[in-house]
Image (cartoon, rainbow, N blue to C red; front, side, top):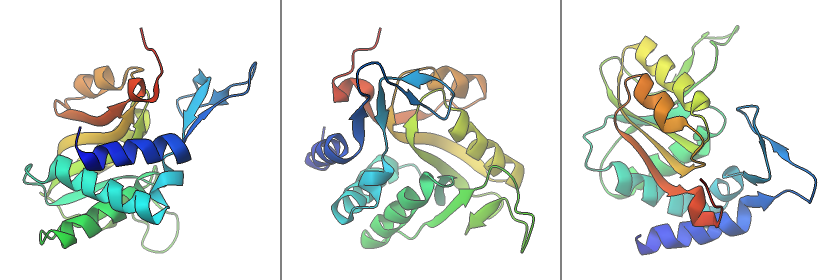
Length: 188
C-alpha cells in the first residue's frame, strides 16, 4: 500500500465508515441490509479527500491507455472530477463523464454527460462495490454509447458478489483499492 493509499484509507475510516447502532442496520443500494455503511462522498467532497482520491485513481489507471474515466451519477461525479484534476496535474489529459440510469426527459436528453466519444477506451469507477449493480449500469450505458470498457475500479469492495457479476458480464479487469477487510470487517 502506498503512502497516498494509507492516507486515503485513514480518511475514509474517519469520514466515511459508519457502524449501525445495536439492533439497527443500513439499507444498501443493492437492497441488502448491513451493520456498516461506507459513504465515500463524505471523503470525496473534502479537499484533502478529493486530492487523495484523484491521485489514487490516477495511480491505479495511468498505465491502462484509457481515454476517459467515469461512472454512474451521483456517486462517481466527485471521483471523476478528482481523477480528471489529477490527470491534468500529471500532464496527461483525459475526458471525464458520468452516466445516468436513464436518459433525461428534457434538454439534450442524454444518458451520458461529459466528454465521452464513441470508440474511447474507458475506466468505469465507483466508490463502493457491493453486488456491482450500480457499476454495471454505467458499464451498460458506456457500451450502448459505443465506447469500450477496459476496466472497472472501486475505492472499496464490500466482497458481496460484484466480481462474479462483472465476470458474468464480460468484465475481466476488476480492481479495488481497498476491501472491507481494510476497515476491520471480517468476511467469510
